Image (cartoon, rainbow, N blue to C red; front, top):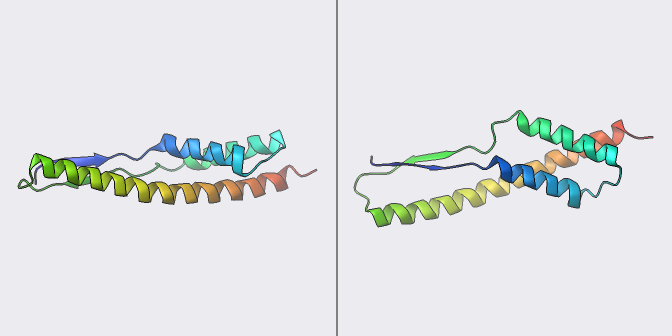
Length: 107
């Protein structure tokens, strides 16, 4: 095996996505409820390590060009699949926390 390539997860991506969901998709007008949702989602995301880093070992027989091409393909595929999954999961967490906060702050 030659080299280990790491494809980093991106916690900042999830944070930006949950802010976008709260600000655009949920369209919550009550600032108290909105703050409650942000706090709860932030706490939930902080409890988890975030998107995992993918590490692979490549055989010595691969040329530098093959390594570069393989890295680009794997990076693109990994990022696309993990990002889509993470976005769906964060959206679901936001929606569930929004329901809780709306019940909690109902007048």
